Image 1 (tube, chains in turn cyan, blue):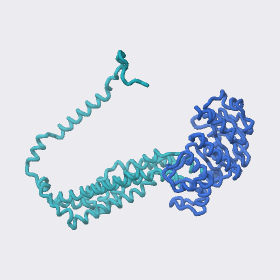
Image 2 (image 1 turned 90 degrees about the horizontal axis):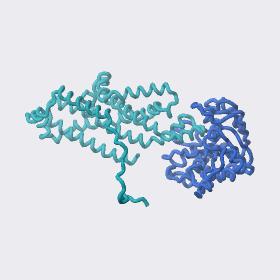
Image 3 (image 1 turned 135 degrees about the horizontal axis):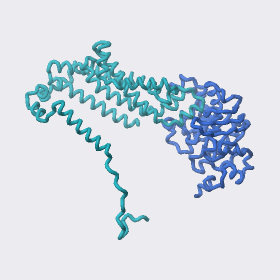
Length: 272
Length: 258
């Protein structure tokens, strides 16, 4: 048995020399602090200013105190919500369907040809670099105001999220079954279907649900640039200064997102 | 019929795993390949179904000239050669039956594979293969829920479902305990004798090799250093193959006793 208590009279153990704090980390901290302070001064940040602003009469905050709860269930709001949900569902479905073959084509296991692989991976990186609101703005310019630009924006946004997450999962799969399928005389497509897809399917379904959550949230702001859904109506109230109605809508949206997220998290926990 | 002539394999990294091997294995033989790890056992076995390409020399398997095969030809060859792996190489997340049906892919059209709708005949073949290794009742269990021995039996069933005339087994018992190892070796021996399938097994336990092999092939540093009936192989033979005296690690039973 090894004694946990030190024996009586044991000498104090000499630890090896403690490593000096790294100069790099110290420098990094200094840079972060200096940079933050400089930025705050440049934008004229002050706590006093914030407090002063809050004490002034403020129609937005007044609207919050007098929220029109009726706006949560009004006919027009309901239609806007349904459009938002439709946008999120369709954008997710389209993005997810295209994302699986796309992700496969950017990974070694799915695409044995290095040059097309690098090209496709670069395309996926470019798609990911563009934020959702910019996609929406671009498509509003391209195809006009309405639900279609919103749908296209969510499609590309889904593609960006799904391809990246799925490709990372594909990089970590067990290659044993792949070897077994090849040794059994399977074609490339058969190998992917039988040895690769079953391995990533639970994670992939989980990402698809997560993507749906993201799309639902994104669809709220899409309307601000005229791309349909609940955002259109939020923008409408904002332009007319009807803050009380706007807050009602915001709370409704908050509720819908929470419910969807609650359900999604539970399903995802079962999947993985 | 498998015939190697002056077959040499050098990997892209510069390691030569097989040097000028001449070897002929007739139909229906049960051959065990022994040698230290790194002696080239896996390379030799994987050369037979074209998973590892020869650098030079000739290799004829069932009339296929392996080094010159096109992609299509290689698939046709692999359809006739079943393979069993040390790590089982099953898809854990799917059922035992789906794993065994992988052995039917070579005759299944791609569209059927994509919608996972196999022919009834193929399902029957898979069921017979599972029945032969005694785990038909597990057909709809997820592969991850099986014990190691059962998983390797699924591996054997998958190879059998191909209806091959050669089975390659790369260290099939290295991840199993001694009793399970014997079960797996007995199934392999039975399959060879009853179905007349040429069976080539890599092993590193000498007692298993002498117990089951009709013929033992010894590899050392990529060269063929022994080829003879299992009964001819004694301790001196193995010392020559291993190039050192034997230890408890080399036999499964002495190691198990430790």
